[in-house]
Image (cartoon, rainbow, N blue to C red):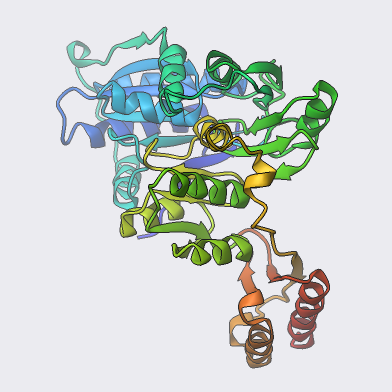
Amino acid sequence: MTRKYFGTDGIRGTVGRSPITADFVLRLAHAVGRVLKKTEARPTVLIGKDTRISGYMLESALESGFNSAGVDVVLLGPLPTPGVAYLTRAQRASLGVVISASHNAYPDNGIKFFSAQGTKLSDEWELAVEAALEEDPVWVESAGLGKARRLNDAAGRYIEFCKSTFSNDLTLRDLKLVVDAAHGAAYQVAPDVFHELGAEVQSIGCTPDGLNINDGFGATHPEALIAAVTAQKADYGIALDGDADRLQLVDASGRLFNGDELLYLMVAERIARGSKPAGVVGTLMTNKAVEVALRGQGIEFVRAKVGDRYVLEELEKHGWLLGGEGSGHLLALDCHTTGDGIVSALQVLQACVRSGKSVAQLLEGVTLFPQTLINVRLAPGQNWKDNAALASETKRIEAELGDSGRVLIRASGTEPLLRVMVEARDAQVAEASARRLVATVEGAK
């Protein structure tokens, strides 16, 4: 059965257009409540949100929908997505709900859910909710209506959790940091976490007005952080996205480190303290250099589809703990049940403090392969998968590259485009190889 509303990370869209409307969200909460009540007499749900102006409206709709189904609600206010996941588990709640469209601009918003264990929910659960949405609502009697209350110290509890993932015998006292919260959900908590661990902290992107989330700041716009780190003469800059589950890091020289490099560093730190991972999960887009470096350390590497949800699925399948993607979604399941930008930053800084080396020094043995990515517009009805010439040319280039590169060809999920990507140790080889593939695709039109 195909899901009608749920995507790879909850339900997301433009506010005011289906399905991100107040009436649909109310029906959604009612349907979720009915699903919860099949296994629990009196469920309790936590609701957190980012800083979008539409969060007020959607929060009220969720509260009403849950209450109408006999579900109690605990309002957390603005809080990072991983903070909601943590508190859902810590509070022994039935479900966690996040109102956020992550790194999207403010006109968008979305709803995503966490299980009682603080993990993403299964496709089967989402299908059960969609089935309940097709049914007529069943309002409970007045005596059975749910209640709502606010957890006033939600931010403080999450701050303490983040700090607990940093080694007790270490401090950030000698570091000057710039923290960029993208005017998003971490604007209150992120600066405090690093400050309370001893760092000197300068904040940018921490003055939300409901309309400026991700606007020129945060993990998707690191240029603001690079400028601030340089101006402040800081040691590092930490950029989060709107719901703070994504991390980008900048050093004193203005060099930007992406998620692939930070994932390797987290692995290396565990090796250094005698906890060598059996394996690591990346994605189809993870740079080949990281795979080569990990295999050189005797660590198995597996690629998942793009998306932290699929990385998590592979980690659970293999029983491993570390995974991530270049965008900065990093998973350290020995610290948290979901991706957490603040916790990931602490893991990176912990590696630096423990070793006495900078991020750049720790990554001296890992030089990312140059990538060439070219988008090719597909003609209507063009089936690139059956293109024998493309298959033949792909095999030829893969043989030429050997262990020094790789080819990835995949269709866009949103546009009639074919994405042709080639990695190689030599940038000119990557570009020439990609253009050979593109010419083969275009020649078949």
